[in-house]
Image (cartoon, rainbow, N blue to C red):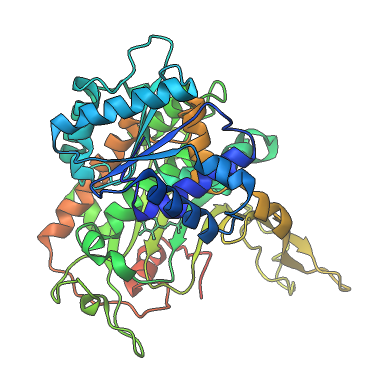
Length: 484
Ligand code: BG6
């Protein structure tokens, strides 16, 4: 059952992803999709919209396969704030349950304004929409944002917990559905070479960059209330960092992986006021050519102090990472659209090639780069001898990029995540303890920022952010691996 079933996300991502699962046989005959939203609409009109959504996402929407798939879609107008309306939904769900022999299994997908999440979850229970068949499952899928600080997130979680157990709640973080983010675990725990060096003895620092080329586009009214820290750091970046920082899970199961991520986040140092002020910097983009600055985008107040860029340093107080910082940065209107992780190893303690008459350039640090997007792959920078006469070293790269044909077959994040929900696998979703530690960390930065008036705008579009982001890392005698 999709709440917000006529929304942009549903048409653009969710239904095409379901269709991919259908084509691959992960959904067959025993399923029905009930879309709801305020709008009044017939099943036929809804199905026509589904057909369009499949066509828009590059499918042959007039094929028999597509029309068979679409025949499983139904629509019911619904006002989520009107408790009485839920009985209509309940009847519709029960009819579909019988017709498609669903045995009471229900998935409720909330893809709408977060202020309604709590009410819906409550009414689903009190109005009897959750299946009471003890062999059936009830699962709740929630889109971000999960609160806007720790207190509101806790309030929301308390509301959800009245109806759903933690293992029934699937909090979407679409970065966890990305191929190369999932590959972090394979890379770390599948390779002695990598995992044995994966600590503060050998790693100097780790850099996570989520760079976006576009501005806020048409999402300004949401974004201006959120800012880069809440929009990208609290969720996506914290999730990536916890996968990079966690200890090896006992087994590759959702419970074990989540337990290790939670432990990692627990040892993340929550900054005091002074450290928050020095270890995190923010930015807002200025104007360029015909493009307005952030404050002159549609629906943005002219005196907005919302950050469109953030960079920061994270420190873990644990045996593995003490002394090895994680630098993170993300922003809108930057040089390019990409996501990457650079793991910078320590240089050899002694550079034996740097004897006085040597012409060798000093040894470079080994860097392992995980390219998440737009191209997926790894690259390992090593020092090697140049092929010339004499003896000089130079950095060389061992590259592995997933080829285009293979990339085209890689499932989209939403397809993977929906498949996981169908299987009941919570590995790639954020658990409540993870979310709460992430908020506690982020709240502290926000608290300090809210006390200071920022000097905005402070970065040029198509750059890599404000000068402060450079100073942040240079202060530690380091530099960003990706630079313009
Ligand atoms: C979303 C943010 O969670 O992630 C957006 O709300 C951002 O502001 C988007 O643009 C980036 O996702 P991706 O997959 O395009 O890197």
